[in-house]
Amino acid sequence: MQTATDRHEVRLKEVKPINFLFHRAEVKVSDLINQIPMAKELIKECVRLNLHPTGPIHWHYIGFMGDESKPFTLEVCLPVASIPAVYDGNFHFKRTENFKSVSIVHDGPWNEIPLSYGMLMKYMQEHELQPSGVNRELYINADFDFPMANVTEIQMGLAASA
Image 1 (cartoon, rainbow, N blue to C red):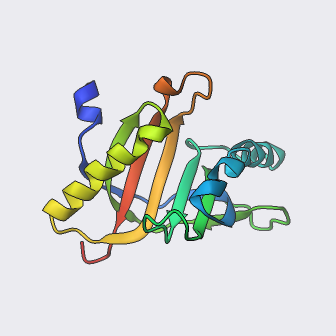
Image 2 (image 1 turned 180 degrees about the horizontal axis):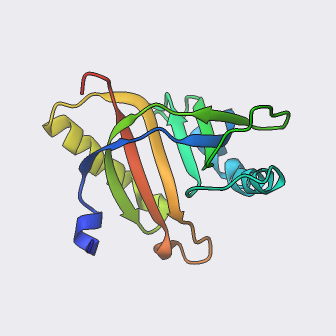
């Protein structure tokens, strides 16, 4: 059984390939709040297509290196069991490769998430691991009324040589 202490430990993780229905946008950190409604839209599209969702909403940060003033690519993603052979809609589909990362579970408000990222970066530095420039946040529980109940798994991607 996993304890609260275990949940806050940094660990190496390799995520197997996943199918995603997703929305892609070029954003800055200040724009992120505008992307929150995308989760609901992805779920609606998943239902419309009669697809089976297989996990929580993910946000994939591509090319974000810590400078909040610079734009980066954000993909708001919903894991799905299968990818349709033909799709003509507002979103995209992809199947990822294996994703090697350092991971931690962050409990609580998102405004405190930099503390968890700091723990991941410290671990990477201590173990001489290089970032890939792709990070994932998995929103296991997103409670907008009581942010202390938020549970977010953060996965910082590792460069191929790691």
